[in-house]
Length: 78
Image 1 (cartoon, helix red, strand yellow):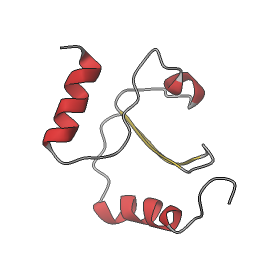
Image 2: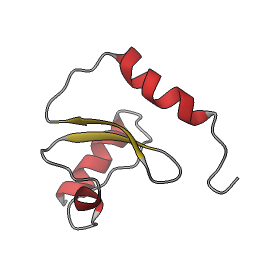
Image 3: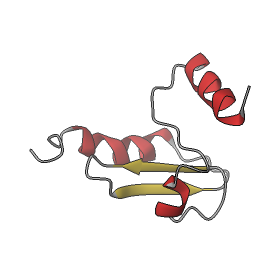
């Protein structure tokens, strides 16, 4: 099993449905990732709206505050 496969399996086992990116797909370079792990909230237009780099223990409320406003935004182009 490759590292990306292991990460996907772990996320799935824990009920996470967010998108996982890994090296080689250009996402890290495009988002200027400077350390691993990295957590980013990206809106439908591809704009990074929140980022955490390295090990972090952000309170759930902080992450919800970064994500919830985006859920009400319309689909890209609409």
